[in-house]
Image (tube, rainbow, N blue to C red; front, side, top):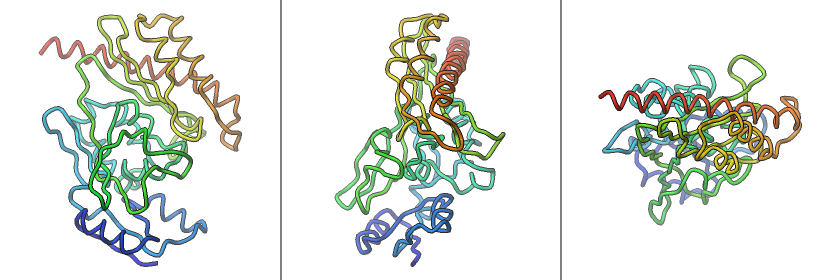
Length: 291
């Protein structure tokens, strides 16, 4: 197995074109354990972390751009990004230990395509986009179009993600991410729930709810969103959110949780994530009105 560390997008693309049996990585926090567990070694591993465009967190006009190989610790330490996307920041901060977060990245978390990836539900809830590099040029794809199954993505051989793009939320919009794990830290989610809520006074005018670890890919719960929009977050509306989240699950039985348990927890976490996002959206709206 050979190693390459290109410094430009074009150099990386040329390297991947020359070696079809290559695998890119942005932190190797998943790649190295997978190889040690006995998975087949690629002929070449391509380290993307030395490409400047794939590293950094910037705000231009009303759009945040996050390099696909940016360590997640750079997100959790960015006060401006955390203010706009507290839920996504929380999700990024749950990827392993502090040491791992100095290597892990949103690009790696997405493209590893684990059903339990913490950042993916929050990225989808915030309508994130990715810029994909390929030999035929760059294209922009919604995050929910990347993962197609456990360990599988829609990216063609030789393609990789350059950066993520997120539009700044309106003053009355905010998000939240919660997960349930068997231990207190550094574990894989049994269930994850992301919510993004927009409010107008006490009325819900927009909602996105996405579950993780309860299906082969992150699952958007449209019925829960429908139950919320137009409501004033009544007990009945929140109960409908919980019921819809439980019904949307297609989980498996494993050593971390049963099917019945995951369905129950999904409903509880979805309701709690909605309540937290709603509280934040109201606080955000109040702060905006005072400035």
